[in-house]
View 1 (cartoon, helix red, strand yellow):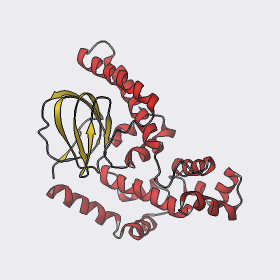
View 2: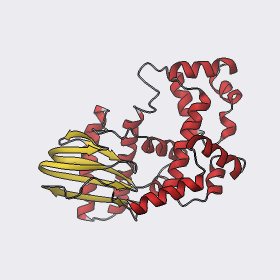
View 3: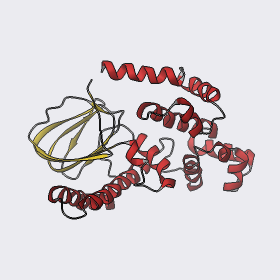
View 4: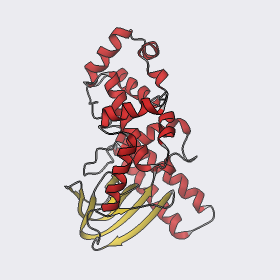
Length: 284
């Protein structure tokens, strides 16, 4: 299967098409697709969804996708990668949260704009980006970047309303606060110790774990481990960081402990995992 690469922080494409020549394919980057006009079907991971004007889709590096056009369609594509998310374009305290949200979209077909008020914002933002991109006026690069950042944050907000999967409408606010705390501090293991978290949230050590599992159906260690693994796998897939650098980033005392953790959760060590990814990319 063909995999497309992106060789710049972000890329804007505006096209009007009567047919989509590409078959199912994967990207090594994120792609936002906004339907300006037209109808057809979106296929993602072998599931289909009928699209029309106003729909927006997020394609992650894990997704196999394609479009079938029924009536002439105007597409707006915004492509960006992890490198752009981690650049100075976003506040450093928000990067980890943003990265988690985008990497953990549900990989299902359908419009990602769940917040109705955001739908009214996306259209003029998209139109403004296209206008600046086409006209190339004074300060257009700076304006485009600000508009792109706003669009990415709007998308992240809509995805966040449905993350993580263990959360539903019955989950209490404090349980959501605990989840947000874990995501924010996933790179600092010392802040995720039970005694620290119980102090932060005013819940006793003994009750904290029971409370979290009651509202999420996962223990705190399970959730921390699963969340950490998803981010580590993303690092191994989409970055050139050395194993020792990734281990240090996630607060492991040394590479040996990091390898042991990864093997326990994945069944192979990080180097083997990265080699397998390389083999898959070459044969795809």
